[in-house]
Image (cartoon, rainbow, N blue to C red; front, side, top):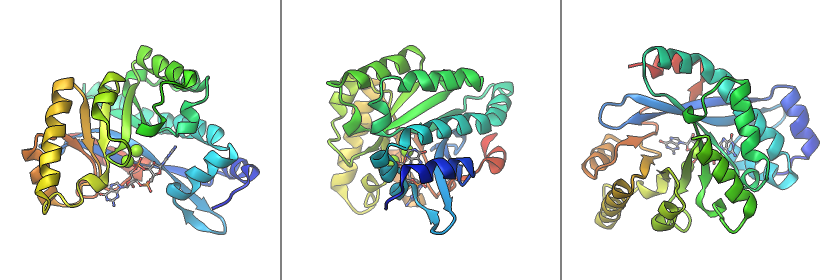
Length: 256
Ligand code: C2E
Ligand code: MG
Ligand code: MG
């Protein structure tokens, strides 16, 4: 899909975007530990456009920088309410946002995120950034600088869609990533594929030894959940627990 950059600016000004939030839960208790912000675009003529279509278009036209900043600011503003409540109850509740590789390759990116945290009175420790493995290219100085800032500020770095790219867990451990998100494709055939279960069992052991947190994405069935629990996985998200919901509905899901 093609969208000129000016369209994106106009859409931001006209409030055509919104965020929805999908809970991330403890698999054994289903207690919510955080939410992932996911973008939605109600386009005036095309209807709902999927982020899988518009994010790549925004990366091509350069609009992703302004858009990404809007996402972080909006998410922190909306999350302020449930974060305050979580603190009162002494519960951990993090906010996870998706970051495009393009953003991670801009020098000032992480500093801009930290500034927004300060503006929104959001604790950096309660923020997580999700980035795809292939963009964690340490040969790029900008990427290194951004990762260093995130480490210094205790912003948790998660590798999104793990299993769709190189899937090099050892490199990610060396890189000091904090967490992996297992892609939905990694668990689609978990009930019928012994090979897949063996692989996931090894991965769970390696991750646990390295202190790497793992969140399993796209859990839709009780049968998948039972296997994941048996293999030692602790965190996940998916339609089995809840789809992404508007900010106003987060409160009803979040407190246990
Ligand atoms: P992602 O970060 O891997 O997000 C997971 C996607 O899986 C979301 O799709 C979510 O709605 C969907 N999902 C969650 N649970 C289930 C399940 O049980 N079954 C199935 N089949 N799907 C499930 P969504 O919201 O369409 O987002 C697609 C992708 O667009 C995201 O993948 C992310 O890469 C990107 N994206 C979304 N919002 C943003 C954003 O604000 N900034 C950036 N840079 N990318 C974003
Ligand atoms: Mg994600
Ligand atoms: Mg993913």
